[in-house]
Amino acid sequence: MAKRKRLMPAQTTYLSGAPEGKSALGGPMSVGAAPIAQVASEAASTAALRELSDVLENARAKGLMIEEVPLSAIDETHLVRDRIEQDAEEMDALVESLRARGQQTPIELVPLETRAGGRSHGLISGWRRLGALKRLYAETSDPKFATVKALIIRPDTAQDAYIAMVEENEIRVNLSHYERARIAVRAMKEEVFPTLKKALQSLFANVPRAKRSKIRSFVTLVEELDAVLFFPTAISEKLGLALVRAMAEDEGFADRLRAALQAAARPTPAEEIEILNRALAEEKDASLTQPVEPQDSGAPAPSRPSTPPGIRTPGAAAGERISVQAAAGVRLGFSPDQNRIELTGDAVDAELVAALRDWLKHR
Image (cartoon, rainbow, N blue to C red; front, side, top):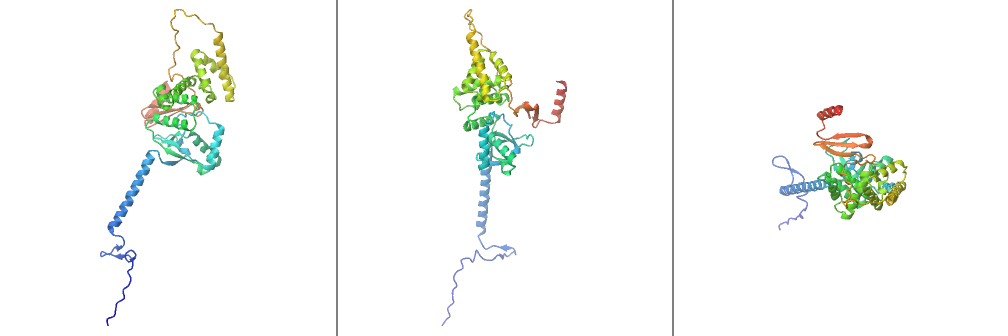
């Protein structure tokens, strides 16, 4: 009787678990996945990595990726700020919030082509958050406060950068009429916009026309009083418009108002507002006591010529810098309170320095 052979069960791990052998050429040979499957897997991985890289690069280019930037690398004077002052209590609250919870909302920065003082990015929006982080880092020296979370945006023009700054502040904390008017004047002065009308229409495109007209009226206050006011944001809409009307009716009122402000101590906003109200009341009383001159031939009285925008130089806030494109490849920065002028750009070279030195000798 023939002896039966015992059949062993199939080993499911025979192929995948087989030890590495050698090919006919003497090299290592894998008996795992088929070569075509391995190539396909590697190609898919490469394609996935390339797609992920493209997505990240696209997000970075569009300003959609939050990055951490050292505080020391940020030029906060890149744009003239629309906000003039910070409320002390609000700033204290922001500092404590950042201390407890960290930075929740990123600021907006723009990469700088010409780096002044080693700074690689210019501030667009987030001035208060940046200031609060600087204060925390100065107090604690904690490395977690040494950087700021930021979106790196790339505006097509300087106009777009100013519009982004104004819109961000309009959404978060409303600017005063004075601050709105002032940034329009300063943006025009830095040649970002060709005219005051264009500046107002661009910066406040989403503002109702009536409100934009009031901002235009406050431009007169900026042009006449910016150099002497200590607390301009305390001026209400009603008081500001009344002052502008008085200036239009009496061309000497602005001069008298400046003299009154310069002659008085004004340690608080309330005291400065009192001076403005008193001057306005005196102006109204004087107009009531003046005799009315009879009209001679019925011809309309000559109107007071308006001052062309930009003729009167508004005062600059402490630490503020005016920056304009002086020539091709040359940008000029001026810090009035520091008596400092800076020239930056690709065209700033030894030849320009020699020409500038020669001009200064003979000016």
